[in-house]
Image (tube, rainbow, N blue to C red; front, side, top):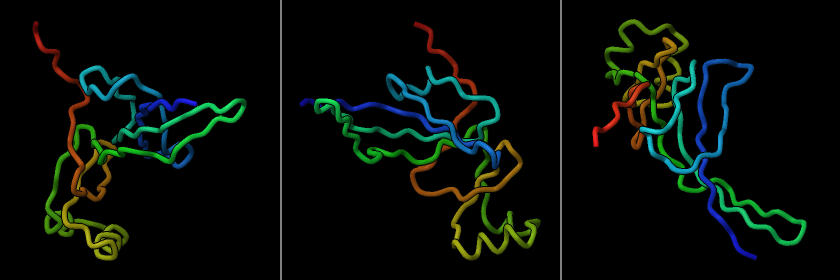
Length: 127
């Protein structure tokens, strides 16, 4: 039995109906990744899979990246609290956010260590 590492990208959407979509990918090259319309963020992860006869074995998620927020803007908590509604203020205080990110779906989310901001379109290198 041999195991193989598979790469995935998980896109996040503001929708309650379908908040995530996961796709298998060849590699994590951001310049080749097609950003899905409506997604505000994505992250990468790997899964180790092996076949043992008719049984397929899968590992839990491995090598999970931080969130890559698309066309977002990092905000200081003090600035967000100046105009946040009571629900957002309570969430920020309960979860002790250090920084926030203003997303392209007009929402604020926590910006954690390891997260990044990426453009929706990448410039191709001239070779």
